[in-house]
Every structure is written in C-alpha cells, then in structure tokens.
Amino acid sequence: MDGADAPSPKVEVYLDHAASTPLRPEARAALRSWLGEDGAVVGNASSSHAAGRRARVAVEEARERVATALGAHPHDIVFTSGGTEADNLAVKGLAWAGAESGRRHLVVSAVEHPAVRDAASWLADAQAFTVTWVAPDADGTVPVDAILDAVRDDTAVVSVMTANNELGAVNDVATLADALADHPAALHTDAVQAFATLPVDLGHLRVDALALSAHKFGGPQGVGVAYLRRGVPIVPIAHGGGQDRGVRSGTFAAALDAACAAAVEAATLDRAELASRLPGWTDRLSAVLTTLHGVRRNGPADPARRLASHLHLSIDGVEGEALTFALDQAGVRASGGAACSSGSARASHVLEAAGVDGDAALRLSLGWTTTDEEVERATALVPEIIAKLRAGEAVT
Ligand code: PLP
Image (cartoon, rainbow, N blue to C red; front, side):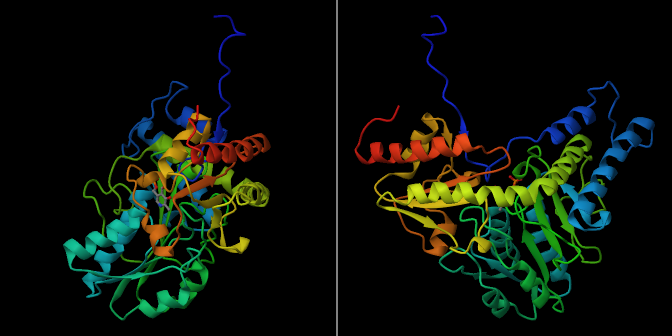
C-alpha cells in the first residue's frame, strides 16, 4: 500500500487533562537526569556514600523547590506516590492522631474523590469513627456554613476538596480555614484538580494538610505531595524505615521527586496565563454543545467558582459509555465522569450528591497542551457523534 492509500491517522484531541496530563519538558529533563542517564549512579537517598548523597541532594532540592512554589516550609513537604496516598495519609493519619486525644468524628464533603471518601468510610466502618457527610449545592460547591454546622467538639478532621474533579466546582477553602483556625480539628484539602489553574499559597491558606498529584499538572504519574503543617500531630499509615520525616516510609524516589518539583515550578509559572486562556475554549465548547437539544452544562455558573479547565455536560438521548467510546474512535479523548473510578457504569456519587441528571455525563478537561485546533475539532466532532448515536447510526 503506498502512502497515498494509507488511511490518514486520526488527529488526537486530548481533552482529558483531569485524568492525566502530558509530561512537561522540564519534568522529562529532570527524570532523565535523575534516572542516571548521564551515567552517574543514583543511589539510595538514605545511604551515606557519595551515590546516596547525590540522590539525597535531588530529593532535598526538590522538596525546597516545591515548598517555595507553595509558600510553605520544606519541612512541611512529604513526597508520596500520588494524590491517593497523600489523601489517605492526611485523612487517616490526622484522624488517628485526633483519636489519641479522644476525638473520633470527621466532617467530609459528599463530593470528595474516593481517596478521601473511601478512607473516611473505612474509618467509620472498621475503626469506630463517625463521619458527617456534607451535601453540596446543586452546582457541586460545598457550602462553608454547612461544614461549620457539622463540626463538633470531638471533630478530628475536616476534609473539603479545593475543587471537584468531575464538576470542576471550586470551594471556599480559605474562608473555611479561617473559621476553623481556633478549632482543634485538622483541616485537609485535596487540591489535586485545582493546582494546574488555581494558585496555592500556604503562607496564607491556613489548612493543616493538602494533597497534590504531579500527573495532573505536567509531572509524571506515581508521585505526589502531602503538605503536612509542622506541629500538627499525624500518625503514619505505613510502617517502615520512616525515611520522610518519620511520617512516610519507603526509599525516596529521587527522579520522580525531582520531576514533580520541576512540574510544580513550571505549572506555577504558567498558571495565570493558562487560567486566562482556558475559559475562552471551555466557553466556546459549551456554547456550541449546549445549543443541541438535551445538552446542559453542569457545575457553577459563576466562572470564579469553577475550574478554568473543566467543562461538564449532561447529554440526553445517548448512553455514556457509547458516547466516550465513539468519541475515542474519532480521536477525541474525554471522560464520561471520572476516569479514576471508571469501570462502573453507575452514576457517580458526585453527580448523585449534586442531583445532576441526564442520560450521559461528559467531562471535557483542558490543560497546558490544549490548542485551538483541538478545540475546533471537538466542537465539530462532538455534535456529529451525538447526532449519529441518537439516530442509531454506526460511528466509525
Ligand atoms: N484526588 C482527586 C481530586 C483526583 O482527581 C485524583 C485523581 O484523579 C486523585 C485524588 C488521585 O490522585 P492519583 O491519581 O495521583 O492517585
């Protein structure tokens, strides 16, 4: 078959940055150098010989760079295997520390990622903690008053995400943190989805714990950050060598930590520009798609309360998995809800809690590599595919 007859490869339109983002060049360069590509052995950062000391320098430099970008002290930064571990460490570790002084109650929003939600449920089911679940408003935001109303004298942990992964709804964590400043409960926020487009300044934000995941802002998969404010008691969730502050055990992942720091810095540098560029595209997609009958935009109407990167739609007359499959066939990578819990065709707990209806949910999430061309292709392809599916036509 000569070149002219070969089927043209479909242009990939990647609109699933909320699930995972392409690696930034700065992160790739850090990975390459700290994986030992230049021939130098990267030792175990806990070893005292030269190879170990080199790795230790990589880890400590990475910690300092992350701390500087977040407005935190390096001692407050613990590297983890990702957002899931950072959330588990915060929720369980702070809850166990609270229990040591007799506090066994948690306040958790009903729209948390499973990394928080299931950790809290497990504490209730297996560990005799009590959880008060706080419902969101219909736009997915969690009212600060409702959280504060749920807090009791014996509350050990309050956990409210900075922004929701499905609806992109942004919560007023700063007001919550100020209101809880004099309460012994520890405040944790999952900022995994927010970090790419919303500034995080821990010099001013009075949370006790915060979770990040590098692959959501151009870093590699398998590394994240738990910010744990100094002086806030926490019990480790895994036993071992206690390498990181005695709170997190496991050999330091020097290359991943360095790449995470590079991504944190790069994301911090281009965040403002990204946050001002993306809404033009999400609004354009929304404007085109919501002219179709039976298509509605979900999440907050106020742009200040929703992530610049996320567009969430309800679509009637199509089946969710068929839609994302057909989009994928056409080269459009998108999510029917949240990729992290995909595999289940059930409505997500987030959409249920916010009372979002519709036959199918479609999340289009944009990020640092998104181009005009991708957005234009999506505005053409998504309506075409919805029309074909509704007409019962095959999508190839
Ligand atoms: N928290 C939120 C809000 C997320 O969206 C995700 C992943 O999608 C996680 C936590 C888990 O992060 P990781 O994939 O790094 O474990």
